[in-house]
Image (cartoon, rainbow, N blue to C red; front, side, top):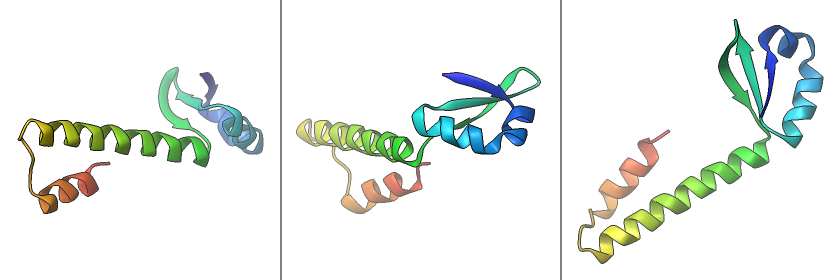
Length: 81
């Protein structure tokens, strides 16, 4: 993953956005990673993969008889960031 300084991110914002469409970009401040910028499509794909993993884990729990009530499941799912 490419990394740029916060100063370069500020000064080359348009270029940074173009790069983020091709690959995620780490923004560093004082040599420490502080943020990642990525395309909306990549972010949505990441969220979808995470949801699929949670649903698969829930199915496994149900198969073992360890399920939770639907309302509880969805409340937990919606409260996670």
